[in-house]
Image (cartoon, rainbow over all chains, first blue to last red; front, side, top):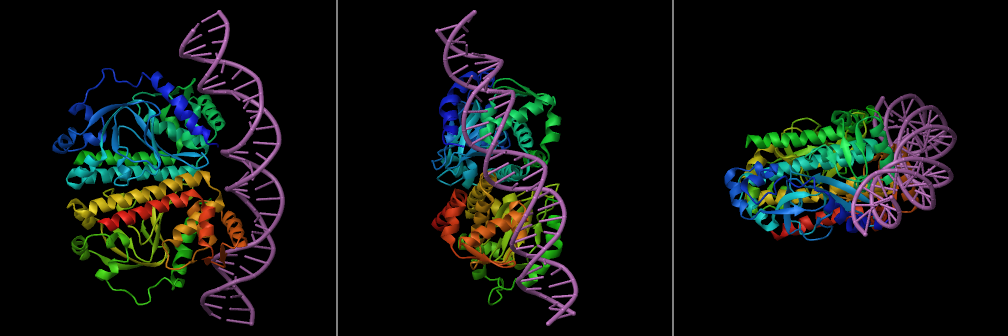
Length: 268
Length: 268
DNA sequence: CCTCTTATGTTCGCAATCTAACAAAGCCCC
DNA sequence: GGGGCTTTGTTAGATTGCGAACATAAGAGG
């Protein structure tokens, strides 16, 4: 556990990987559009008038692998609504040890959880290249303060995020590395367009806060059991329900909360 | 780690302990009063007109040790604003393993983090007997939807709670048991009226999700180092800054976030 | 096709924590 | 002031994951 661990990945591996991940680009490159925003479920859940009022502030951006949307202690000028990208909220300890606090994809928003806090208490790193909409945090704050459907929606999203973080805390203490790996894969899968994940074992180890060798061992076992196959930075999930069974309750509980969020949202 | 662990504590130890903890009762028993509500910092931070509109719905209640304000999967009809009481958000796994997700005292509110979710994703248990104000969740929801200072305040509180949960996840993976114990003691201390905590090592072990023997060992070491003294369900903190130094960054980061919450709140 | 980088596989010993069983106090209440 | 329950102390062996060092292989780019 040394300080070079994340840096090495961040500054060296990350940009290179970003160039490689062509799979995540949409078939036809999207433009800023009303329909485009609907690819983010949180935006899609807003009443049409609210979304329209936000629309002028939204900007479609590419989110390359490894990009830091904000870092620990830094300012959070923008919030991001991922569409095809996946973003990790990561905490890096002073000694270099890392832990993934939460993961955000097309179901959520990055930065609003830290609303009004001027400084981030963790960093946000793009884990899977893709697209997302961003807007100045101040505009979202203004919209929040105007009331309507937005405040309640964000509060509800926070509830689901809470569940995810809570299960991270629980699983971090009481799950085996294999279980954690299963859950991590499932969380990505839920936010990915395919059953193929472009990620190295080293990256996974950083996210889970374990050694790379432990991931090698765990992944090997999952492959032997026919749940996944992998080769050099590429994991394919073969048996989703098998993973779910192995992951145990942590995944299930958090997933249930997200599903409920969407159901509740649909009622609006 | 068996299923009887929490139950034994809950149903048997808890009521007994509650009867014992006389220290936490206020010198003169408070009545529902405007000034009483100010003992909760979140309520105190509300503009006078907002607080007055909530006031009629607030009810002063005693919160005896061990009382479950809500349980996993259960309904959350009330939100609670502790004044002298301390409440743990606990998750109990199917196999009986436990983890404390967060702790709430006079600085916060229990139940609102799970706003609009009809089912709780963890249980809330009174850890230190005392008082608190409660109100029907629906009334708070109504007030939230009316806008004004309340939505922003709750959002800000969520930010601080996020920081605490995040550090729980981080520390759960990367701290020694002794460090976790230090941090846990400090978190209680911040919400307690004195430097004496009424809690058994067994209770602590349940909160931290470790074995009781590990707490015995860790507490013994802290006592040898002159940081605390203890005897049968009673821990006295002797050297707060010593504990902080030992606890490491997790405590510091979360504390900073709460301090900022209060500063921001004071600006309102 | 060859090379060089990066990703994955493997090993050994070590430290922390857990499981399990039992011993010794301390404190409440009769 | 003594019985009985609760809390704390102690030990021994098993397991999981860590640290470090190195071996192998896959694929990108020349």
